Amino acid sequence: MLDQNIAAEVLARAVSTGGDFGEIFLEDRVNHSVSMKSGKIDTVQSGRIHGAGVRVFEGTRAIYVFTNNTSREGLMDCASKAAAAVRGGKGCQVLPFRVNHAERPEEIRLLPTEVKAALKAEKVRAAEAAARAVSPEIVQVQSGFSDSVQDVLICNTEGAFVTDRRVWSRLRVAAVASDGKENQSGSDGPGAAMGFELFDSLVDPEASGRSAATQAVTMLHADKCPAGVFPVVIDSGFGGVIFHEACGHSLEATSVAYGISEFSGKLGQQIASPCVTAVDDGTMVNEWGSLHVDDEGMPTTSLTLIKDGILTNYMIDKLGSRRMNMPPTGSGRRESYAWAPTSRMRNTFIAPGTDDEDEMIATMGEGLYAKRLGGGSVNPATGEFNFAVAEGYWVKDGRIVRPVRGASLIGRGSQVLMRIDRVGRDMKMSAGVCGSISGSIYANVGQPMIRVSALTVGGR
Image (cartoon, rainbow, N blue to C red; front, side, top):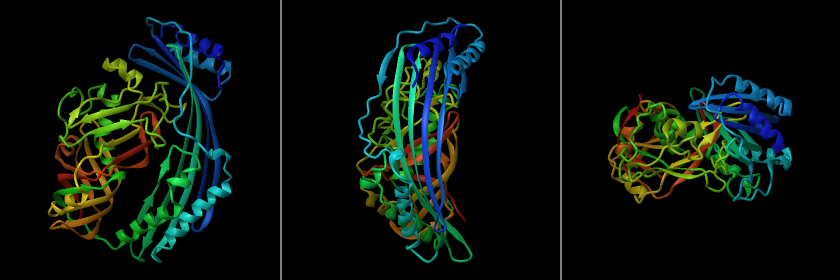
């Protein structure tokens, strides 16, 4: 993707005014998508993202310049602009490159770029038909399939010269149910770091369609959720978004390095119930948030964030490493060449425990069973969050008695971690897209079923 001699020349220019670290990130990415709406194929799109960025460090200060002109002249221009912003530092040399083609533990059998759009459309149609067959109350279905093949090259003044190929595929289904007066929606969106072969073993389009539609119909006939402080059981899979948002972002160097996280300075301290172990793992084969190397060229890692309730690690990128005086953890990520990287999550989950899932509900008394969570918001500095419950059920005397809608979960990350009193045995993961200061990236969330002994439930 880039001649080594040119790369060395560009890096030398980038640090010529005193920068003490230089980096090039070059990307060539092909995206495809097929979507269906109202029973017809709505769009078929293809696109290519191509460009590069040059980054220079001056102590704990970073300068980033990017371009879609990846010729020698274009890259040298980027390097010159980055160098011009350096105020004067100790400088550095460009070390000889150690060429590394990132190891790939998984096999991509059907590269999405080599699969015809008609085959992708078949999967989309199957999901749409299955959703509509659930009930005559399903009035609208949107389904789609998207895939991406990204080739990257990352090199820096420390001698790294790494190439990698990342492949992702994902199906999405959204259904709307209506009784003529009110509408309710449901969705499903399984994805993986795989090619089109994900439909052979992992994703069933018809099952996804039925799941989305069933959720919509169930919530259409649900009662209003009571409000108050109750025990809450949060199901596996996408339920893990509550840890991702309310706690995970507060463990990234993005906030920790500046001392604006509620968990800053708490390594080695108990921040969660002893039954909680939480992990951010980029090494899991074929998982949506997995990488071979991060976007700074470092090998990906499996990082235990919390062990038996004790805070053991933060997620740290190269710049965060300088600010925190701690080693980077292979957590540097970015949306594309147009973004400078920062510390981000990969596959983040609460690890399996030993508790029986049925017992959690049977012994909770009265409260909420949150089967699926929806969108929400969080303040990383305080950990305060608010999440919508996309699919919920009311529990009374240890029994699920009825579906409820309009529920939200309100609290603080550190408080919730300490109030988890049950962790189930069956951990599942769900694909998502996470936004932060380095753009939107693919990230997995996950957990077994967990129980929070007391949590504020917003309702009506």
